[in-house]
Length: 260
Image (tube, rainbow, N blue to C red; front, side, top):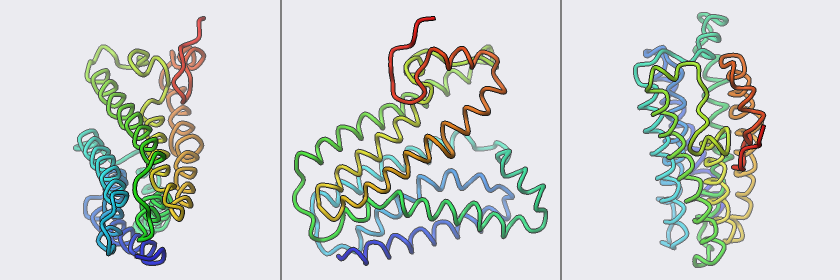
């Protein structure tokens, strides 16, 4: 399998997934389902590229496995969390602003944009599967270890937050125990580690080193665009104790809390 074959297979997979999700969102009148598709889309990309391959190297299957576990966990969690909930406030605001033009606007600004980002972020999964990849080595083991740290932070952090929110007595309060004592966003930190881990596995192949671009883009998204920056702005408005939490707790990388 050549680089162009891998890139094209991934692009076709992204177009199919996002177009299908957009079409489904129209009768449901809920563009929020794109959040669930985000994780599933990476799984489809990984397998689409794998099925184009003419070899069965350990690295190819390792990248597919790491991506599949991450994507299915994320999609399953978001489906459980959002099932039965109304459309995200951001999309409701867009729907109100654009009226009858919302379907085409959402296709261009929501589904197409996320599809492009999905294709870029998944570059290590694509390029790490080309036919000239050598056997799995030390760098790949380091990548897997980092991936394990990331998936653990994501899973445990999400579970702790879900348990905290399930208690009505915690309404309006800030979770500052467990992993959330050491970082304000353990799930985003975990997401970052997962994709840098995948990037390291791919980078060992040479061609796959270009996939580091995907890990960089994911990190920027998590820190500056749709992750930490966006959520912090909302939390500061909704939770009066959040500022004190900010002052003593690391924003991203887990660190011991500061003493007051």
